[in-house]
Length: 415
Length: 214
Image 1 (cartoon, rainbow over the protein chains, first blue to last red):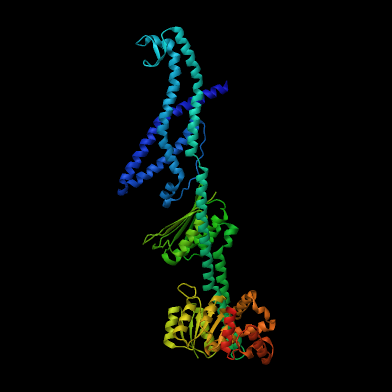
Image 2: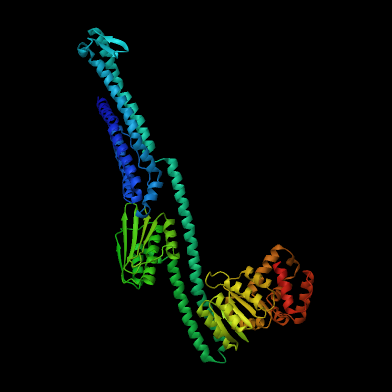
């Protein structure tokens, strides 16, 4: 009995869904086409762009609404496809390149024709048995005094007496019992279409994932290459010449030891200085490769250490609780380190702010200074940084108009 | 003796200058990149140009390219090229320009002041000085290929010393044998390698290096 009740309830919901598909489909069909047409025709005037953006947003809203409606009406759960959402900078390309967007749009366009078909079929499926059921009461009121099925022209069955009408009514009852099955069939069909178009498409998603991974790997290789070159250059410019100078001075001192001990002593003093400087340079280089405090104590401690070493005063606002995955921590740290170095070297800033925020599965680290701006995002430092961030699947934005301020912002994924 | 130094690190440039001047060698000019080097050589026509391989702007081998340019334009200027790393290919480019008054040394060698100054004088005087590391690399490569197997280990030592540009006396000293046996080893080496005997030191180095690099 409970099953029957549940069945009736779900049949009612299916019928409601299938009938509602017509107006809902009409709504999306009209609004999306209108937005698209207006947006495209005004695109040259720039006003069109926000309208097109609205259209793309509407597609997602419509698809999200349909997922919930399908779940309610048809009892079919449609999982949300993974979305390649990025920050504001690449909104358009990310949204347009996402195959999910296009499948959602196709689904919303299909709603109207589907709605027409479902509406007709459901109406017929309900109307025919109900009309037949009612014939014992109604046949007498027809203008011709009889009820003709299917119509006046094709008179396959003519009801002109009570017994005939009763037989007809019985057939109507039998047909009415079949209606839930028909409705369930149609609902199943629509559910399958919804899953296909609104759900994740394994093949397309996998292809997209492979593409993303390939890009990330290329970024990774480039970042590693850049890093190796940087380390080699640092060694070549820093510790190596110091050590050679040190050896040279000691060599000279050795030669002079017997003839001119005072000069030898001066040389040893210089060599000693160079030995200490070489140690400091190697220590800085090692920290530049990977700061120990980041591994031991995490991003918060490492950012504090960075702030402590910076010649420009730094405010760190860390809204993060707990640790992030090591590659993400490392990327975030180097964003801060590079941005701070640039701010201290080029911007003339008197104050720098670092903020770290987490929203859902993304961590954003922003470094803003009050300097003169004009940083070149294609310069080797920032490009290397972008590669490094790209390698972990993040995005880097640099805003630095002439006159400032400079804002470097990275969004990094973290599960 | 007059020398021009080309080295992009100020620290090393000044270090080399003091090193050379302490030994009574006159430093007539210094340069921080290849263009400055060419100008300085044109201005002073020194006995020797001491050149770092890697210099700005590209930090690859512009020092070496400038050295080869100097050899083409002013063949009488001696060339001593200093390199952070042993690059057989760099040495080969230099040897290709002839073995009169050329040298290729690791930067580390400046630490042994006496030996380094000796090399500087040697090259300025028209000799050839090739870093032992480079020679060792050439010998290793040759050995894996073929004919050096025919040499005894003593002969290999003598061959390496020869390739570094050392005189018979220096070879005898390094190997701890008499000058007479050095000469015997040398003629035996030349015979085994099918090289025509060379009485002249420089041409002997050329012969050996060419053989090794073939």
